[in-house]
Image 1 (cartoon, rainbow, N blue to C red):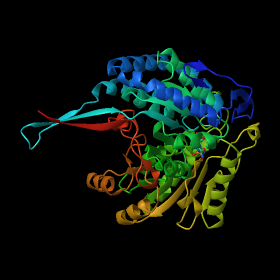
Image 2 (image 1 turned 135 degrees about the horizontal axis):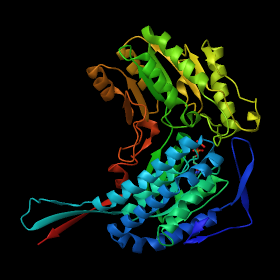
Image 3 (image 1 turned 30 degrees about the vertical axis):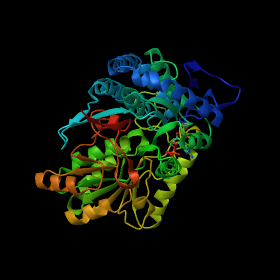
Image 4 (image 1 turned 60 degrees about the horizontal axis):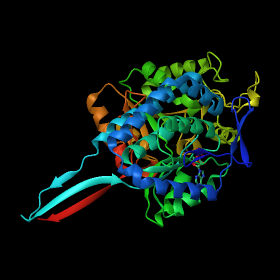
Length: 473
Ligand code: ADP
């Protein structure tokens, strides 16, 4: 753990495993509720000085962290592949994405503008300034174990906040590596604090009930996000949430079905489907179903599962055994209720894969509304395909979910693209685009997919309060 500028070890530890082969890779200090409380005290003590530093000073440190992370891209990516399982190339991409947030918010730090507002009274002036909200408690997930940290820490630091962060219990090593970079970049003692813990609950309780915490930022499942938001509401803490998704991927018959299928194959199996923006319901207009399924099937069969450190591996393991059980339950339910299984549909065990948590990349068609997979987030390497006939019908089907994070539309018709963009109740719409994400672009969900936006100009607002000065002259 890292508290008040010191690395802290205790005898109480928990193990971290490589999900590709089940091997233990490290023992990490197991933090307690009391550790979280101490870290919050320290962050509160560090707040006055840090928030009073100039944005130029904070920017320079973030820029230094960006440079260090870029220099260590390979080292961090290798650690990520060992700890989280994604293929090395994907891990390299994630480190780049993570570093982008450090650079972006090093720049945005200098653009926190205020306002003067005309008054109806000639002897009055209004002055508006933005200032740091205070101590931030952050909880991050295991699926993007480096970039989900910088996406929160960079804007918080840029705004002048101090932080206590708890990473996911399966990926604390990536968090430790990120904090080492921040420390080396010169972030002062007490400004950033890291609590590693095997049991997130007591830490979450402290984060939500300690009055010194003024802002809670969370990325993870909708169930946990709702619970934390409810608990934090008792003190009206500011809350940002990035939660689950159930992304529709809509392919109209005026699009090239082969191109669209290649897009699905690329984005669906990224991180083995363990992404909140992963397409979870693939709607294909009936007349192009056949060429679409042929291409998607061919692409899926080419995926190679295994240890992401090995050359040529394109799909890594799932996070744990429960994930395998959940994914398989959705697949078996779909098949039982009439879906066609084109490939996959079981755990992978050959070639030593039984030592890890591998599920075969799976293609299902003829998926219907009464199947679990139609309603629930999968978080696994399964592509469920659903036929549709009209634009109206597919828009209604796509919006028929309590999630609202990402969505995708493939069409060559400009009017249709715009109507879908406007009609989809999702925070992100990829139009003929499988990667609508960037540090420069606002990421976040509608409905039960979250509150607030990360990245972009908006990202820093989540860590700022608006203060009005009314002045009689
Ligand atoms: P997933 O199901 O994808 O693992 P979770 O929402 O359980 O998603 O986990 C995301 C993050 O939330 C992790 O850091 C995890 O430790 C944390 N977490 C889980 N339960 C709680 C809780 N009750 N309080 C605080 N954090 C929690």
